[in-house]
Length: 81
Length: 81
View (cartoon, rainbow over the protein chains, first blue to last red):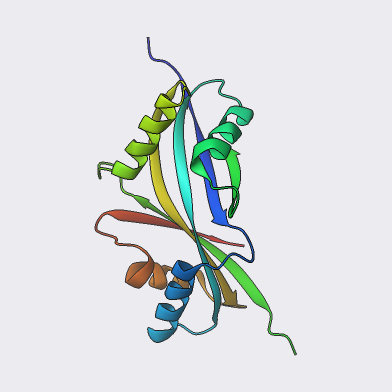
């Protein structure tokens, strides 16, 4: 029998005020390529998880706190699909 | 006068079938930490752009094709906020 699964998506972004050199490099490169009006760029991670059905959002939050995000400098947002 | 701005969010993920060692490492680590039922993990990038008002989705797609994504192995998805 196939076990049913669910998906969760986690966005991890640097907190406001934390310098994002990778995003800044992208912003600079876009300007150099002729794209105008790019005022700011922030780059983060997205993690898609295939989980067994019934996994709670609290459990995903626990994964974020303990592994997926560095909560000193990063914030995370969970979408359960 | 303040120029009005808009936001776009770009998700860049490895295409299905492309090996994702980073996601696999996260899956393995979650299992080792005692989280059960994590069947698969894919890790990608999310890029948040502050753009001048009126920037078209086609222009953002052009940024993706030329800089933000490697379309040989990555797919992208654009959300205009």
